[in-house]
Length: 191
Image (tube, rainbow, N blue to C red):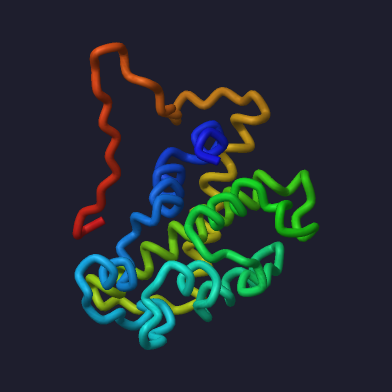
């Protein structure tokens, strides 16, 4: 799964996010509860008590379900057995394993959309948690669609052999012998 992830045409930021998802590195209340023993809080998207967990976030949250139902694929994500981050990433990279909902020609578009949707939901969740900002469903949908279209236009141009001089696509590579490469992704308070 990880070699498929790193070879995928997704943007590096989305790949890193999916890697974190697959390794259960996102700091939901349920994960913090396992580490520190504190109480699992509410979902910061739908405000359901005791549901700040990966399984709720990826498939059971009413916001997640609603956004998936409003997508081009009209996916009932709550009916797909996604019990771990690795299963979520596997489904995103190979959506036809679950059923015939996605046509083979739509797989790349679906994978990009799913990655953008979950990455954006993580942003909305953290914005609510850290800044007390509550996004409306309409605002979320618009932002997800805008981000998806930005990534999709670049992907389509690159697939068509178009020359992208303004866009530099960085790829993860092994470091030279005797060297260590450290890749990071970070967020700041104002961004």
